[in-house]
Image 1: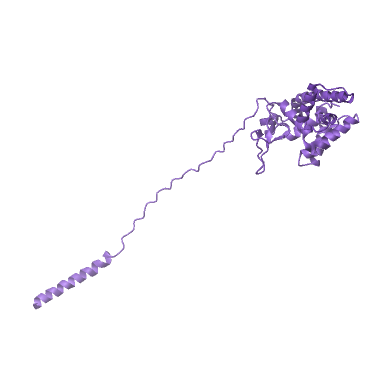
Image 2 (image 1 turned 135 degrees about the horizontal axis):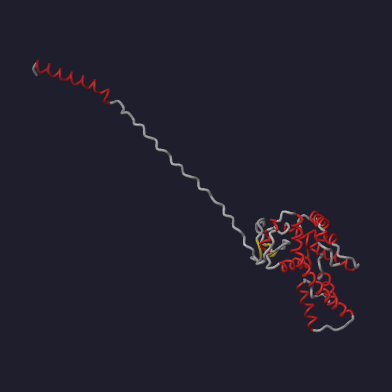
Length: 283
């Protein structure tokens, strides 16, 4: 290679290196980052869950007074007692008629007068209905029936109805005409209590009429083993020709509520404070 050519080549190399030195720093600089434009985040409204309250429909066709809307206490008591009283009186009257028939049969048997086939059938039917053993002698069956087929004083029935149904405002009274909290044990026989224990199968009975509800309550008191003391007290009062005082009979209902003696005291207190709303009768 000639000197000229070498000099030209060296000059060319110098120019190339100079160009690289000037351009390279800018070539390898990081490119400016563009700041992304922030988009507004859409606000998604929270879904409000509407709680739809299911209105439980009555299991009867009876038009009940709306006792919950009666603000005046005296008026509410008057209306409540007036509403329940006729059915209680009617059912107690039926019981007294049946009781008189049992008394007649006792007198007939005592006088050793023979029974007709219809009378034997009647005793058998009543023994089944009132849970009296047919293994007993005929006379004992009749005495057991006499002990069970008897009334409950109006005042005691009324205050129990008021106490158990919260003066006619309870769910069981409104939906099932059950003013006494009477249970039943067949699925679908009534209303399932909201506080029923796990595994329990009882329901609170529902009735188609006030009269039926009263009749079932009276029958429960007259046949259930839990109220043997009640029937014994009533029987003693009858034997001594004493009036069926509701305050005395209330002591036999201790097992009606888990509250026991406190429940009895509350009933007797209600009887005393509401005397002027009902006349004591059925002595």
